[in-house]
Length: 209
Ligand SMILES: N[C@@H](CCC(=O)N[C@@H](CS)C(=O)NCC(=O)O)C(=O)O
Image: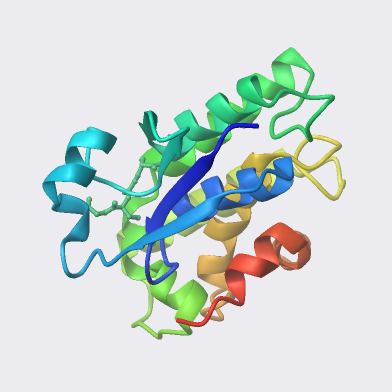
């Protein structure tokens, strides 16, 4: 078995660190955790920046030798290196569903910026409060609700039949609205709340901050 080290933010606020942490837990892989104080700039230390290449969290180190940053790259690596059915799946088996899961992950990481700024993970994990959403953030919230409603129109518990890692990413986005008391249709509220109960996710949510 390889030795695995996951580097995350000390505050447990990074949604991308959450994604990588959940991925390791779902695979049932033992790993060490190293926390970096991002406010103190520990991610810019020469050794971490050189190893991770980009100096961001999360980063995974395998066998003290291979370093990999970017949460989706970590997920893909774990899925191939510790593949189903021996290990739990992080992505759907079906080709088209797997492609759609990757679409959801890429979209969540690259869009809805105003919403992510005004409803940061301080809101999600620390109960922070902000002003009413600006026009741009409200537009992003509407876009999120509309896309999530389409994705979950089948009425199932997960995006694609069984749980996959994109459920975590989508749930975090919805929790930005839910935790702040912003409008969220009941089915999306129920979906986000159910994802929060998943043990791998609940472990992260209840971290002291
Ligand atoms: N697309 C990257 C985003 C990683 C990222 O933005 N990490 C932030 C924490 S949420 C970070 O390391 N910030 C510190 C910095 O960039 O100096 C991923 O999915 O892993």
